[in-house]
Amino acid sequence: MAAKPVVYGASERPPRGEYSRARPDYTCPQDYALYTAADHDTYRRLYERQAGLLPGLACDEFILMLPSLGTKDHIPRFEEINERLHKATGWEIVAVPGLIPEVPFFTLLANRKFPVTDWIRTPHEFDYIVEPDVFHDLFGHVPLLFNPVFADYVQRYGQGGLKAHALGACEQLSRLYWYTIEFGLIRQADGLRAYGAGILSSGGELQYAVKSPQPQRLPLELDRTMRTGYRIDDYQQTYFFISSFQQLFEMSAPDFAPVYERVSKLPELAAGPANT
Ligand code: HBI
Ligand code: FE
Image 1 (cartoon, rainbow, N blue to C red):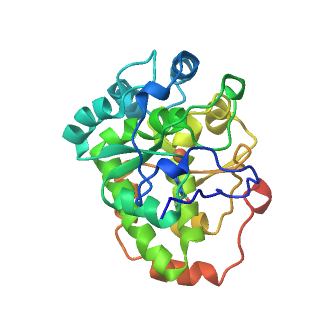
Image 2: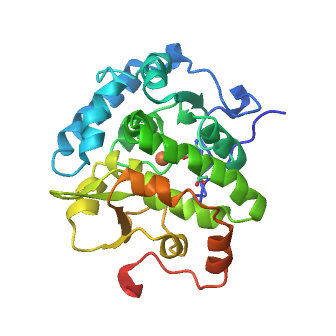
């Protein structure tokens, strides 16, 4: 059965990527020869622009681990990153044609495999793209997989996702993913910093998420976070902050079924600052 594409969130756009190449688990080879000179140049320019924005905005651990990606001037070979990543935390990255359905996604995470989209945005999408491309996944997600505590949290998220799917609670759990792994902030001694991949890989949202007075910033709390909706196509109006990756790991230890039970009886909270 050929892998079926999945349309993520509200985007009406047809999914990108060549899903017919994907295996039943949705992974595919990284066809390195298919990248054009323009693709490598887009990666180089995105990396250069984003790395220049990090000081004072990205968390210390991300800045420390970013060089683990290796080359900056062309799209890295995934197997080269895996040699380092597997030694560091037992994780590996696997190529996928784009967004994949929840159960294959959770299954990969639960097995310490992070799905990395294999295509890169076109030059005129330099500043913004709705779907995750190879730059978002590599630059945004992979450096912190070199941190053992964060890596263990991501695996626990995958395991929790398989349980949530069985309980019909994926929407609630996806909010935890959204407000931590994608758009999380962390409190450091010198102030709030970004650790979420969606912020760290965005040319504009990094400054906005950490410094703008417009969004509300709340301490991460399971029930509150799981009740908070989110937008996939605009800057966030709410960010949640943690005090350490250990806090994330410990928070994800208990069974979430009682949380889903409680949250399902409460009204969803809009993402905007209105309901402070
Ligand atoms: N697929 N490739 C890919 N990357 C993601 O981050 C991703 C996904 N599928 C589903 C998904 N994320 C979210 O719905 C998770 O909360 C499950
Ligand atoms: Fe992502």
